[in-house]
Image (cartoon, rainbow, N blue to C red; front, side, top):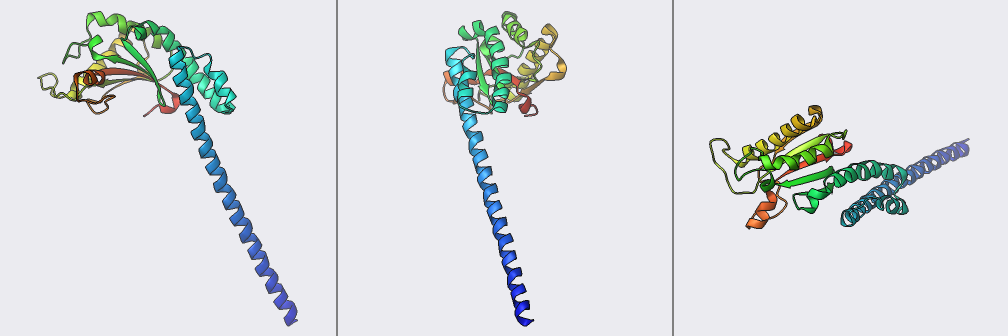
Length: 236
């Protein structure tokens, strides 16, 4: 009986070790899968960035989808790309192609969506937030491109780092915010864009796209961006 009892105890220990080994194996497999997924997502993102860059340079987006599909990016990712970039970007690009060629607006694709950027000199007088009458034609083209889009739209005002201190604008915060708000109000009033889906923000000098150490670069920072947000970027 003592021998049988010792044998049962040995068997219990063996069963515990087998269970422990199974647990460790599963845990290892879990981390391997998680690492593989994260690497795959990064690869997809690189494919997206490269494809969009080629679309901009070639001024056409029709070739982007086949290239993306050849990269085996997966149906869900390809579907999201199709809706966001070949839909939104192509429509906006075609509508504003003339303004882009003239250097009045620039179009960029970011993770959050399509960005329509306008230098302040085409819309406002220096240190002012009132839309110039000769700038209304530019905003009308932008409004037409955005009118029927279901996306949320964010208007962002930016300045350079040169201080302003006037009774109307004590700082660049007020100036950048007023400019963004006036463009938002114009788009809503003149082009019947749903006010529920638009917002305005002033970033002052704190989101530059170029150094603020020379006149040419400071001019790039004085801008208003109209951002057509992806669904996943709403709230950012």
